[in-house]
Each structure stands twice: as structure tokens, then as C-alpha cells.
Length: 230
Image (cartoon, rainbow, N blue to C red; front, side, top):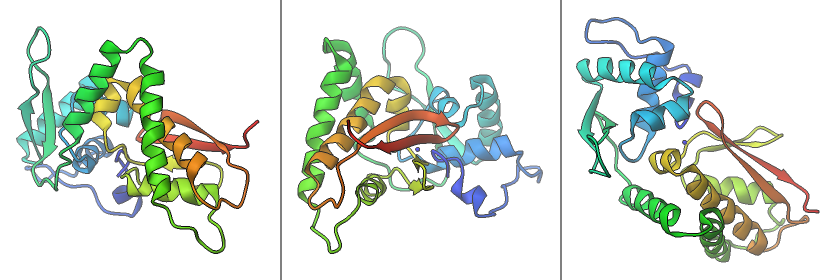
């Protein structure tokens, strides 16, 4: 969605950074910083709060201090209706941005405004995407399991999945800002992607299961659960 990324760095034992005055970051401040650092496009306070589970006022306070310490920068979002646009935050040392993140947000907003059934429209679009991904999958020997197909596909799309044996935990959302603003649309696209992928993936060695996607099931995580169809 670093868990949404808020966590792999912390889980691997990397120490928290320090403020300009030399004080070690609190766990919450480091979580906010890692979340911002992990995104492929600038994110709002609302999106960071949704990903981390922290109150927006708490997130805002940490971001202001991170800005003062030189860890993050900010810029105004494009005007969208009345009122002053929100700040969008990005790390000072910024990796390659996704050129499609902003487009995804615009498309999600357009579907939400114009479709009579935004979730269904988004799901159908995602299903076509999943079918295209499935068409590019090679047949393997032995045949791939459904869990492997889903885990590999979500890794390729930037979700940083981890299969814990019971469910597949997504530790990153590559479209966090769009998902925070238009959760129903963006998550329906991803549900459709998984449905189309499993419907058309070649050579699955088992019955093709249904996938349940639980958005923001825990701070910094979405959960995928595979269950037998029918």
C-alpha cells in the first residue's frame, strides 16, 4: 500500500530516523515517514491517515515536523471545487513516480460521478485488465496454484503481497491517494482484476477460487482471502 507502505523497513530492524535536533523519531512519526516514502505519487493527509490508522490531526502534526526537519516536502493539489486545495506530501529523496497515479485518480473520480453503478463499472474494467494479465502468463510444470498466481500478479502490480498461509496481506497500495478518495471504485477495479485473472489463468491445478478483498483491513494493509467457489 513499508506498510502501505508502513512496515517492512521497520520489521527488518532498520532504526527510526532522527529529527534535525537529533531526537529519534517516535514509532508513529517513523510510520508516517515510511508511508510517504513508499508511495509512487504524492499523498494527502487523508490518505496517510487511512493507511496508517492514525487520526488526521496526528498525521498533520507529524508531517509538519518532518517538513521542518527536511524529510518531506509538499505542494498544493490541483483545484477541485471550492476551497483551498489540500497539501500533497512526498519524501525529500523521491524515487521514480508513477505517471499513471494521477490519471487513476481522475478516472476513478469520473466513474464515481458518471456511472449509475460505479462499483459494477469499475469491476468490469478490472476484469478486462485481469484477463489481459492472465493471457500473458506461461503454463508451468507443475501447474501453478491459485495462491501463487494471485501473489505473483499482485507483486508485479506493486502491492508487496505476503502470503501468511491464511490470507495474502497486501502491504502497499500503488494507488493509495485514489483509493483513499474513491475506495469503492479503485477497490472494485482490483476485485475485478483478481476475478479476471483467476478466470483465465492457464493450467491452475485446482478449482478456481473466489477472492475476497478487504480494503484497509489493518493499518497499512489490505487482505485477500481465497475461498472455494460455490
